[in-house]
Length: 146
Image (cartoon, one colour):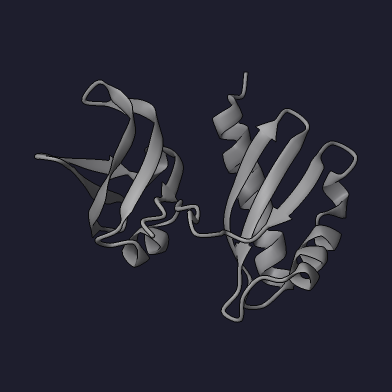
């Protein structure tokens, strides 16, 4: 049986390819499976995300409407982090995240990104540091510090 996490990753991969090939400059930051029949796609663009862009992305995803309710959203201040480049841009920033498998007995973390490599990133939490593989990441978001 396919886990929700695996289904979410599969959908994210499909949707990213479709959207990023069809709409130059649009970056699919994340896809979150909200329920078995509903998902939200977070997109970004160098000139910002407006209603028109969300509409264009939604139009591209019409093929999913027979199985899902589709939402398209801007990332907001607590933008999703999933890819190595997202963590590279988040260096020194505070994040909240959840992993699929436990690391040192825990799956939820809040800390500061101190290193972002190709396959892992390092998170500093008080006096500890954790190396977390991107493939183990379920959710990651910036923490709005303002």
